[in-house]
Image (cartoon, rainbow, N blue to C red):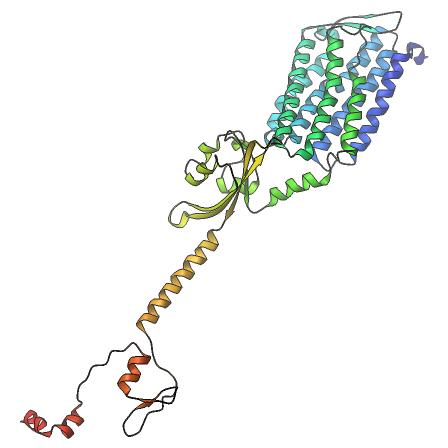
Length: 425
């Protein structure tokens, strides 16, 4: 009988309880799988469940070959869990560069090699050098090879890096998200402590690995974050999506002047991808934008216009600077919104030019129009008030023309015939 090779003890049932708790957490996370960070955390929990289920049978197995087989099976979760924890932490903390395929491929090298070496351990004993079963409690005590320590070092480093990323996010994110992040960090403590106790043989029962069991406590913290603090709720992620689809460029700069984040519109304005810009000094990126350099040290919200380029390449921007403060009111960074107003400025310039041209034309031309009542005999003109005025006075009053006086030939002949006669002679 197959089951005669297994012995289910209290140690086994602890792993069974942890596996059930892990499955429940996975079910909760799957409801929020539309979010990248939730998917990564869900995959991590699936690996934890696989690790825990394999550990159930490893603890229950009564022979060395069976314990080795289930330990090898458990390594799917053992090597994958730290990697997915790191990926989740980085994505949740909004580090765009970790989404690149070459990043993930590079990070996966050691986990993949570790699983391969574990599966082929009988050929080289790089992961386990010896396995001994304690007859009193049926717990196997493993002696480890050099590659086991390489994988342990990798796992500790990558979990530490992910935790640091979450700690930094506490200071970057609004207060609403801080409780969520703290719960995630608390959920990380139990597995790390349990693993240290196992690896360095500090647990009272030698060989009993509590690491997969400790994830049951992590699941409690995750569940509280999901239900009480609405982690992976739609609102914060919809807010980020809104920033991503904005037509205005949005730039987030740390207090020390390094670029923390930017949206696609800002990438288009600068002409450089976010992966290349994040972490770079803003003063270097905007070296040609003197106005932007000046506001990197601003201590209050400001709004002004600036321009870059010359000729046809000239562009105008409306800049709005908002100071981001920590809970203690210290300046933590600055959000700068770039609104392209080139079209508006072009229209305004054209309008001003047109108005100027019209004003100049009006100065040059002022003409009379309509019907003018004029006396048939004396040629006086009647104005709007009913008064009769000489032609000269009326024209001086109602036009910009300057009148000069002379005598036409007919009048010369009539008034001064003698001068006309002399002229003809």
